[in-house]
Length: 234
Ligand SMILES: CSCCC(=O)C(=O)COP(=O)(O)O
Ligand SMILES: [Mg+2]
Image 1 (tube, rainbow, N blue to C red):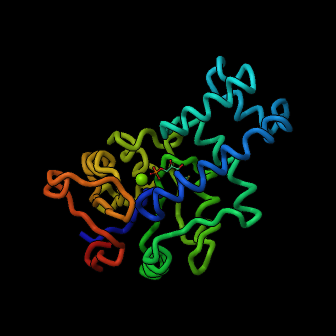
Image 2 (cartoon, helix red, strand yellow):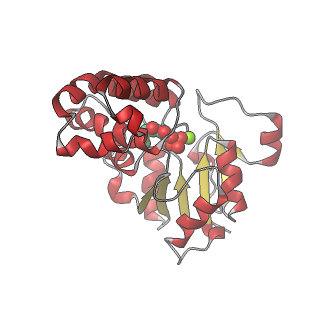
Image 3 (tube, rainbow, N blue to C red):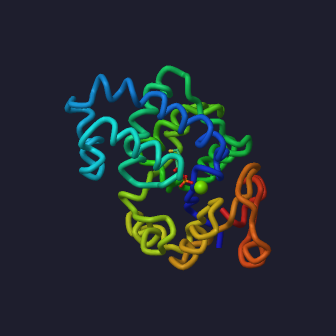
């Protein structure tokens, strides 16, 4: 059945993993010391600080060490993801940060929109960080937000490797049963969770992504570009 909703992962699916690891993460780490010095006790920053475990929210030194450790290990803790979105905001607003979408992404957003296919995002990045990214892209148009119906992260949906998270996302859009959703992700475990929830789901294999096992290739459809999606699939 053709999908009426396309649910998209971000990192490794619409933009390269290297943009996140080599551009966004270093930007956040560089912005951190000045942000802490200027805003540690400010009402606008305290919500990010207080979301950290108390032992790390106690001092700027402990906080910085924990942020560095989490980013080094790419731990997708919601309180880190929320802080990262805050730290990236200035970079996107000043034009220093711009999301390098794969070339097929923005044109496909336009054709899905023309075909009345809903575009929904589900990423470990926080919803505010997702919105910044899609508002500031290298695409044409640069701001893809008007084409996106909804945004989900691990806070409002749950972990991306659990079927219940995909069920929750579907429950937020009850006019579209799970079978009418197509989830696209670079992560095999996420694809498997979406399938357990009744969605259609394919692996997206982009340059720079982790290698896929032969077993994954046997069990799942793998695409290298959104252009490979036939009209019968969405
Ligand atoms: C949208 S924020 C930048 C990406 C990010 O921090 C992240 O963790 C992306 O993970 P994904 O679930 O999109 O692979
Ligand atoms: Mg991903």
